[in-house]
Length: 144
Image (cartoon, rainbow, N blue to C red; front, side):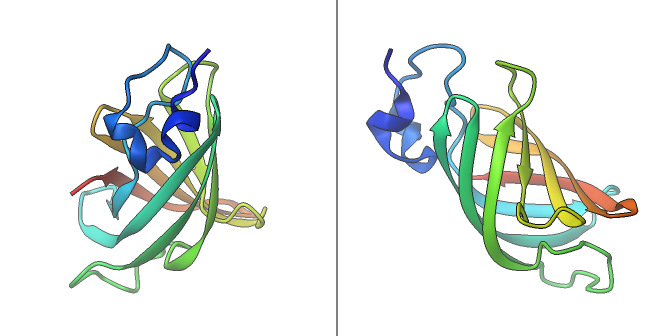
C-alpha cells in the first residue's frame, strides 16, 4: 500500500501526488490561516504547516498574528503567536479533523474543527478553558 505522505514528505508537497486510496490523508497543503468571528469579521491571519504521521494523524507548526484592523480585544485564546499543533481524523475515514493548537495545554486550548476540501481546510475554531468553551468563530487554511 502506497502512502502519499511517505512518497511526498509533507502535506505541503502532496499537491502534486495522486491519492493512493481512500483513508490516507490527501488533504490540501497547509498554508495561509485566516480566522474570523462567527459573524465573519476578520480577526487573525498566519501560516500553518502540517506533516502527516499516518492515515489519521498529523503534526505541525503555526504562526498567527492579528489581522489588519482587527479588534484586538476580541477573546481568541492562545492562538496569537507560534507553536506546535497536533491533529487527528474524526470518525474513521471521514474528511473531518480536529487540530489542537496547544496540545500540551488541557485547560487553555484552541481547537480547529476542520473539514478538508480539494483546495482548503475550513471550519470552526473554539477556545476552550477548564470552564468549557469561551469563544469561537470560523477559519480557513488555504494556499495562496
